[in-house]
Length: 172
Length: 454
Image 1 (cartoon, rainbow over the protein chains, first blue to last red):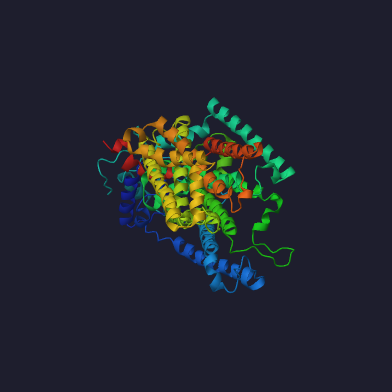
Image 2: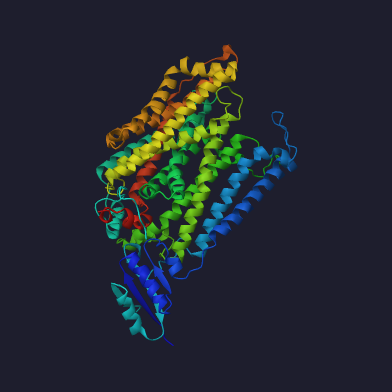
């Protein structure tokens, strides 16, 4: 079975958005949209699920907070308590006020960095990764819709042109 | 459907299309540097090298080559540290706080402001590092297991809080900046002609392609990072102020310090953004994007934060009197009328009086005047830190040990050197990086572009 990949290229984000809605309304699935900037509402129109990055950030933040507190408890209370300026280190609870700044910084450090790493891994972004956009103009001013079809490509061509595509190409 | 008040002025002038934006932002990277750029770059590089020489002398001979004495044990080093960290704050404020408030005017200036943040924090970090005397032992500030038994760092100390705050701030700002840069590097990569630059920007852009799912994640990432960076930036200068506020030195031991330092940091940071952007918009032709409206908005922020700083100064004076603590009262009387009166009154003039001129629309929309005030504010904020640090220390509890501080050529060289280093980094950035977050700027063409505002 040979599949054909068809690219519809649009030059306006609003046209693209209404085209996405129309084409999906016809029951045709759009495999990908490449755009030079984030388009508000495109993820809903394409039926993409909400991203869970924010949830991971929250969990990473909790991890950072716990590890930070654990580190301070171990180093200053458990392993080597010191009496500095008449302010001894008795227990985590008693020292908590002066541990808050570092605990906060650890929370932010873990949440931010681990979320960024998660984002890069989920999007498969890394130095040396090759560019995967089918048309280099999609980082400039063009919006590209990718549809993979088995047959009936005539109908897709027509539909793309009807919805305002300025160019329709087929992957060679 | 997006609706906006008619009186909102356009944020992108001269009817720029999406393709025009691409061309304009790529132009400085693809073109060759002009003689202004080279002149400034060589001058900054020489200043930087002079600073590096002074540092080499400091490390080789010892901290004794600075002007510090037994009474004034902290002077220019910590003054410059706080000054640079403060400058950094505007970048995070613009990119994070203004993102949370959905202020669209941030989009033309956030990239450069964040670059300024990172470069300023790098300069700031040099001062405590070299004040250690043996910078190769700097890793001792980190909680690492070591050969002296388990002698750990002291988590009750504000100086250690600073280590965590500054390193978190630097690294988080860096990744926040870089995540925004990835789509813009991809734009440069996709139009690069020379194979070498295609290769370099290809590596830098991490293979960005602009898929819908990636943009969805990108927006979520920016939002959450902004939400994390906002309390972070407030915590950083709060913690810097605690270096002073948690001590028992009259003039330092005040609870007003954290909010007062944060306001001062934003104040000085916006002044530095103005200094840099007023020059940059001219040199790399970004006048259509960094408009008079942007400059006016930033001047209003300078005016508001300058007023907060003014109120803080007066509150400090009032509380010193009202507290009835003689030491506190003397510390403040000595600031205003003692041997450092000139520093105090320079600070008052530059920070309290000069931003009030921004109430006049004619003045706050005038480029030459804005540039002048931005320099004045930078000087004023340097004096603020100098006044807080040196005048509080130089007359301690024993009149026999009262002294004055005078910087040596090494102090001056180190400070001037960091300014040189800062400009070296900024100029390299302006030549090789997309100086405006073009991908995000393109989202507001239809709502704030001049052709849609008619």
